[in-house]
Image (tube, one colour):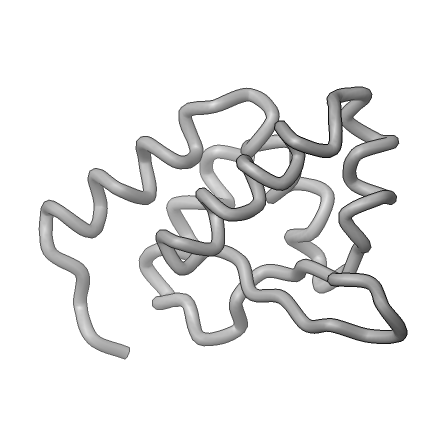
Length: 92
């Protein structure tokens, strides 16, 4: 993997600095794939805020998604760098 620069690290840390986004990553970290609806229910927040948080995590490369049978499932990006994965583990 390519090493990350300070700007990339700042984006990841900023994304993880939000309580709901941190809960989402924790929920998905062990390789689980969850639908937007499942994540919304677990967090107890609106669909809109769930989607905003998921999109923020996807934009910085922490999460990936796939569509299946009319639903979108999110999971931790398997291509994330080893150092980023270790940083996430520390946050969790």
